[in-house]
Image (tube, rainbow, N blue to C red; front, side):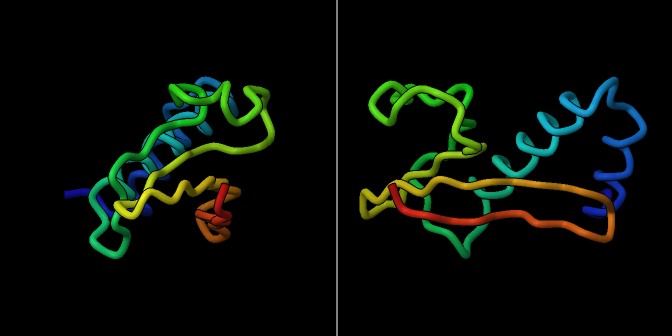
Length: 95
Protein backbone atom coordinates (compact mmCIF):
# COMPACT_ATOMS: atom_id res chain seq x y z
CA UNK A 1 0.00 0.00 0.00
CA UNK A 2 1.30 3.46 -0.87
CA UNK A 3 1.68 6.12 1.79
CA UNK A 4 -0.27 9.35 1.46
CA UNK A 5 2.94 11.20 0.67
CA UNK A 6 3.80 8.64 -2.04
CA UNK A 7 0.38 9.08 -3.64
CA UNK A 8 0.83 12.86 -3.72
CA UNK A 9 4.29 12.49 -5.25
CA UNK A 10 2.88 10.13 -7.89
CA UNK A 11 0.16 12.65 -8.76
CA UNK A 12 2.75 15.40 -9.09
CA UNK A 13 4.86 13.30 -11.44
CA UNK A 14 2.00 12.00 -13.59
CA UNK A 15 -0.21 15.08 -13.86
CA UNK A 16 -0.18 16.87 -17.19
CA UNK A 17 -1.16 20.26 -15.70
CA UNK A 18 -1.89 22.04 -12.43
CA UNK A 19 -5.59 21.57 -13.14
CA UNK A 20 -5.11 17.82 -13.60
CA UNK A 21 -3.10 17.63 -10.37
CA UNK A 22 -5.82 19.55 -8.51
CA UNK A 23 -8.56 17.29 -9.86
CA UNK A 24 -6.67 14.15 -8.80
CA UNK A 25 -6.14 15.60 -5.33
CA UNK A 26 -9.83 16.51 -4.98
CA UNK A 27 -10.82 12.98 -6.04
CA UNK A 28 -8.39 11.54 -3.46
CA UNK A 29 -9.91 13.72 -0.72
CA UNK A 30 -13.41 12.67 -1.80
CA UNK A 31 -12.44 9.01 -1.41
CA UNK A 32 -10.83 9.72 1.95
CA UNK A 33 -13.92 11.51 3.31
CA UNK A 34 -16.23 8.73 2.14
CA UNK A 35 -14.24 6.22 4.17
CA UNK A 36 -12.98 8.24 7.15
CA UNK A 37 -14.68 7.07 10.35
CA UNK A 38 -13.99 10.47 11.92
CA UNK A 39 -16.67 11.97 9.71
CA UNK A 40 -20.20 10.68 9.43
CA UNK A 41 -20.95 11.63 5.84
CA UNK A 42 -23.93 10.24 4.00
CA UNK A 43 -22.57 11.48 0.67
CA UNK A 44 -19.45 13.22 -0.62
CA UNK A 45 -19.44 14.87 -4.05
CA UNK A 46 -17.03 16.96 -6.04
CA UNK A 47 -18.55 20.41 -6.60
CA UNK A 48 -18.19 19.92 -10.35
CA UNK A 49 -20.42 16.82 -10.10
CA UNK A 50 -22.73 17.97 -7.30
CA UNK A 51 -26.33 17.32 -8.46
CA UNK A 52 -27.84 20.16 -6.37
CA UNK A 53 -25.32 22.81 -7.41
CA UNK A 54 -28.06 25.03 -8.89
CA UNK A 55 -29.75 25.24 -5.48
CA UNK A 56 -26.52 26.68 -4.04
CA UNK A 57 -25.83 29.26 -6.73
CA UNK A 58 -24.21 27.06 -9.43
CA UNK A 59 -21.16 29.24 -10.00
CA UNK A 60 -17.63 28.41 -8.90
CA UNK A 61 -17.14 29.95 -5.47
CA UNK A 62 -14.00 28.03 -4.56
CA UNK A 63 -15.83 25.02 -3.19
CA UNK A 64 -14.16 21.74 -4.13
CA UNK A 65 -16.15 19.11 -2.22
CA UNK A 66 -19.68 19.05 -0.84
CA UNK A 67 -20.58 16.52 1.83
CA UNK A 68 -23.85 15.74 3.57
CA UNK A 69 -23.77 14.44 7.14
CA UNK A 70 -26.09 11.72 8.34
CA UNK A 71 -27.95 14.44 10.30
CA UNK A 72 -28.68 16.31 7.06
CA UNK A 73 -26.15 19.15 7.33
CA UNK A 74 -24.28 20.18 4.21
CA UNK A 75 -20.56 20.90 4.45
CA UNK A 76 -18.59 22.71 1.77
CA UNK A 77 -14.89 21.96 1.70
CA UNK A 78 -11.86 23.53 0.11
CA UNK A 79 -9.04 21.08 -0.63
CA UNK A 80 -5.56 22.44 -1.36
CA UNK A 81 -2.27 20.67 -1.85
CA UNK A 82 0.44 23.28 -2.27
CA UNK A 83 3.41 20.93 -1.89
CA UNK A 84 4.32 17.72 -0.10
CA UNK A 85 5.14 19.58 3.10
CA UNK A 86 2.37 22.18 3.12
CA UNK A 87 -0.95 20.41 2.95
CA UNK A 88 -4.22 22.18 3.71
CA UNK A 89 -6.96 19.66 3.34
CA UNK A 90 -10.18 21.25 4.49
CA UNK A 91 -11.81 24.45 5.52
CA UNK A 92 -15.27 23.33 6.58
CA UNK A 93 -18.23 25.61 6.58
CA UNK A 94 -21.87 24.68 6.81
CA UNK A 95 -24.14 25.72 3.98
